Structures are given as structure tokens and as C-alpha cells.
Length: 203
View 1 (cartoon, rainbow, N blue to C red):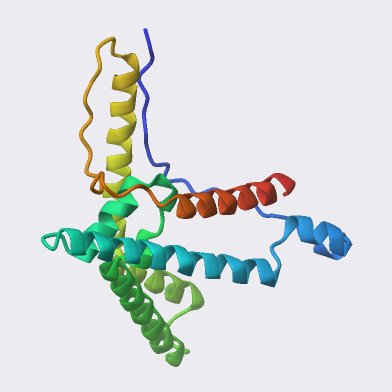
View 2: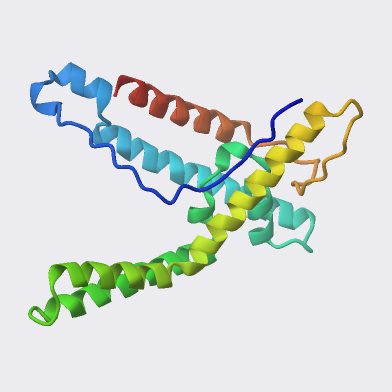
């Protein structure tokens, strides 16, 4: 009998320091381990290109079916392509707005604490900032938990399909079938992931 799988969050945070090696490395070794400024710039350009292509496809879908807004189509495109995981933070207006507001609130509060030099100890300031950040990012925390719950459900659905002798229909929301996936986006995402993986292996 197959053992049941569990997904859980560990409240304990483990920090693994990475020793400084760059001082004893040759330029060639550094290029194999660390990203160069040019590579980081290329990542940013590719990210913008991917976002633009998703937006263009979303607008095209809305022209075909005006009942579905471009924002909704963006959401459907992201859900239909696992390689685009994480782009929600760049393409979702609500997420971007909430992130900006949270960072501004924390920054303003930090300035207020710094202005009161003798009212709080450094430890008290750290605790106050942490508590404020936890409050202003509550929406994002709940969204992350909701996403994790969906991932868990999808994992168990895949297990059920694999273990069941009879086919099980798994319904999921996707973009209209008349539009094929964006192959160029998938290719670029795969290339980026391979580059990241090579760097991790060398570390």
C-alpha cells in the first residue's frame, strides 16, 4: 500500500552561510559561479519581453472574446503555463500595488523610528519593524497560503490519476484551445532555468 504524502510548512528557519570565495578565485572561476552585470541585465530584458508577449496574447484573446477582460486572460495564460510561475508578481496590478504600498509603509515607519534615536533600542526597532511588515503583508501571506493549497490539491489529483485504474477527468481552467501555448516564452524560461541550475551546481 502506498504511503500518503504530506505537505507542511516548517516554522523553523535555517540559515546556511555561504563562505566568501571570490577573493581566491580567478576571473574565469568567478564567471562560472557568479552572474555578471551583463547576464543580470539580459535577465531583466528577457523578463520584460516575456511580460510583453503575455500581455499581447491576452489582448488578442480579448479581441476574440470581448466578454473576457485582458486582465482575466493574463491570469488564464499564467495558470496554463507552469514555466510562467512567478510572473504574477509582475503582471498582477493588485499584487504590484500592494507590494509598493507595503514597502513604502515600512520605509516611512523606519524613518520615524530612526528619528527617535533615544526612545527605542535597536532590538525594539527591529521587533517593531517586523510586526509592522507582518501586518502590511498579511494579504500577500494569505495569497501565498492559498497558492500552496492549490498546489497541494493538484499534487493529490495527479496521484489519483496515476494510481487509479480508470481514467479520471481533472477539470482545470485554461486559455481557449484555439490559441497555442507561447513556445518562445517556454523556450526562454527553460533557458533561464538551465542557467540558474548550472550556477547552483557550481556553488
